[in-house]
Image (tube, rainbow, N blue to C red; front, side):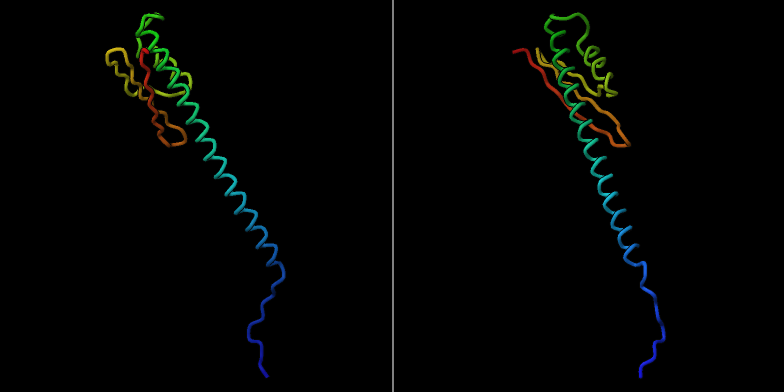
Length: 115
């Protein structure tokens, strides 16, 4: 006859497995939430950069008062971004904006031209 040298109780192992599965699912949900939040904020930043480029182009054409790059900078600062580049080429304006969120630097660009 074979003797049991090592007998281990398996009671409670299903509970541990269930808790582990719950923590894995919660981790995946948390990661999904962070990624979707980053994506939403990036699209908001792009929209504000587009708006800033259009406003700067209006200033460049004389439809508004001020300086084009300063106007763009004020608009982008509302969402926490910073104008990195602002180039005026003839009647076109090119704006580059960066924004740091949760340690990740996002860069977006916009272009407006007098049509």
